[in-house]
Image (tube, rainbow, N blue to C red; front, side, top):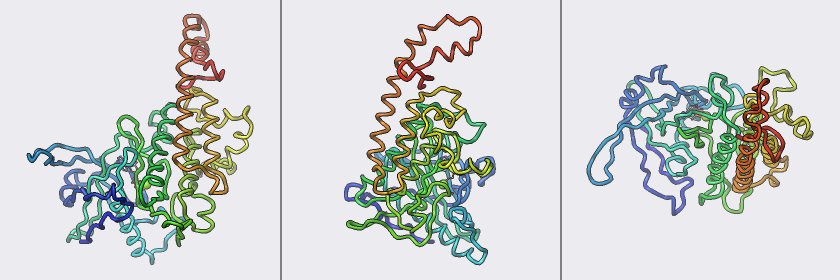
Length: 389
Ligand SMILES: Nc1ncnc2c1ncn2[C@@H]1O[C@H](COP(=O)(O)OP(=O)(O)O)[C@@H](O)[C@H]1O
Ligand SMILES: [Mg+2]
């Protein structure tokens, strides 16, 4: 069995703590997920499949050993390992190398998530690393995020759409998670794979970043970047300078965050293969609409059914553009992004607060064309557009 790496990376004196991860047996996780049954599968990524499950956790806090059940998500490394994350197909001859990369990702997650704790980073509960007759087992056990991923809510038709305000709050939560990694740990951490499938939502729609498989420590003091030999991540999210040179900085995450902001505004994926050619790349598609305020509403997610504040959406697009500045150094720091989002949220909610008064004025006036009248009644007083819900 591989020893689980010491939580050295990313630890600071204040954060350096005993690794309190629990080691699970494969049998325990097999039982927790009903034998990794298809019914229990809740996700799939480049690493492998993710299953819902229930484990028994002990609580030794007061010297008494009591136990309780905990809902968890169990991620199982499959033999395809890293394959889906690379920007090129991997030939069969590289199979072992690929598995090793998957294994490295597994170690990376334990290394980072075992140490770095924050309300906007998903909690790693434990792991399983056993080499048995039945095979080599590498699994990770996380707190279960009941509302799954942002990807599910934005792009899966069966899942109810997110309100405008929920989108803003999710953006702010994700920004806080990134700001913590970039600016609040002694050694900077670059996430490297920010995308909507790695932003998970708990039962109250609080957002947390997950999937630290590709995370890297930032440059040492005085260094400007990390040189990488493989460009990895998810297509459509990687910063141009990283793709061109392999040079990685925290500002690469800021670019990816800008892409996520446009996904929140439009309800479209960074890359939409099934769209006409000129609409496939989100950033290319939005460009002409963003520069013309009369056309802007054309790009806003139709699933919002007009229930958003156009000014708020334009401010969010302006922030996205800052994150998507070609010159990486000119992009804002994530703590600045958190601050700007806070401002957008408070402005949006104060506009929202003033809306009901206007709504009252029009209440009861509608006779025919009821739907249209109801929509008018929630028009925002300040920005003269549909209200911010
Ligand atoms: N803790 C969790 N709670 C709920 N769903 C999860 C959890 N972790 C992962 N998932 C689901 O599984 C998907 C893939 O997980 P992820 O950690 O991103 O794996 P990969 O490394 O393979 O990309 C996520 O997009 C999400 O839908
Ligand atoms: Mg993922």
